[in-house]
Length: 333
Image 1 (cartoon, helix red, strand yellow):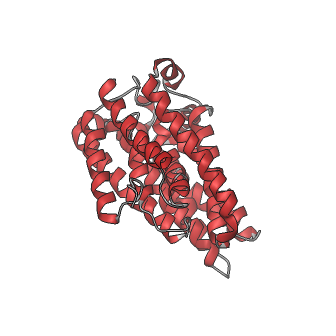
Image 2 (cartoon, rainbow, N blue to C red):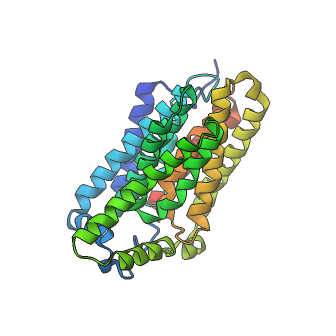
Image 3 (spheres, one colour):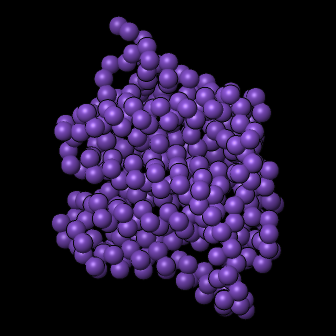
């Protein structure tokens, strides 16, 4: 029997995930200098309140963020298994989420994007669930929109992700205007509530809206990050890109063996990957802080290659290289 590094049971995968979280979040490695917006943040009530809490209890927030990352890793694996995204059961998405989301930047203020990833996973599970609803699913999309809206309220750059709410409607549902309206209302509800609280506290709502708009058009130091990447960084990025490509090729070759739900889910995740990468790298609020969100589709799509058949030297090598390079980054910087 050949050695298989890529297949582990639930207990082993959970144990490896916990070990990697300790390694990643315990090292405190960082490649960004400015963690959040530093211009006019004192005028932005919600961001200031959250950042004050984070700055007051940085260690506690970092621990909570690490625990949230672990919870999200379990949710990712559950999402993939429940929606029949592989031809054989695998818990690899859990481990991959930890590797990808926590590789480049872990710090106390990473808690906000981790919370956004949690909210996006909750919304995504509802979107996938809507495929099974025969009647109108306006309630589900009201809730899914609400999760996206809460994410946009606590971390403004995630507002760009709302496009994927309506992409989900287009993929999983028929064109019922009531569902589209429910999704839009659900998204706007938390933001409306936020500005209503602003008004009750005596703030100028128009001014707060302008500050929120500034948050959507401000980016951190990601433009200078690329000049500081090492060989190990490029190795990790290259392995991830190669695995995404090979996973997509495997999916195209075997898509006839999938149920329609699995095909639709895979297509949605691939669209989500393309859009989230664009938001992280080229949007006005581009930031590596959105990496936990990008890690969601990556951690679900990549295992398609590993779960497509028997392990080989190449699959074991790529998997080992992915894990080792992600660990090495935290000790080289």
